[in-house]
Image 1: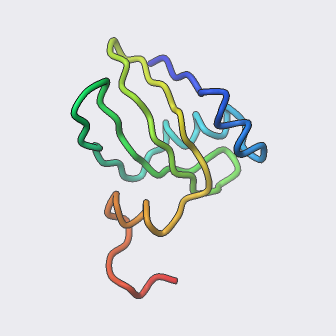
Image 2: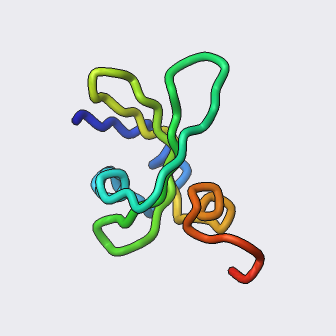
Image 3: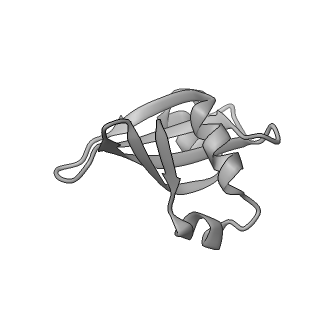
Length: 92
C-alpha cells in the first residue's frame, strides 16, 4: 500500500508528522465512504497515531492500492459520529 500525505496537512496542523498520519490511517478504528458525484472515492476515518492520539483523516482512493490523505487532525465529535464511534448527545 502506498500512502501519500498532501503538504497542506502539515501546513494546517504542524503538530502532526507524516508518520503520525500514516500510523492513524494504518490503525483505522472505523471509516466510512463519502459519496461523491465525480473524482476518486473518498473515505473518512479515525485511527490512533504513533503517539496514541485519536486522529481523523480524509483520504482519496487513487486506485492500485494508492491513497492520498489530504486532511488530518485530532478527531472531532462530528467525525467520530460520522464513522459510528459515538452516537447521541451524551458525548461532550
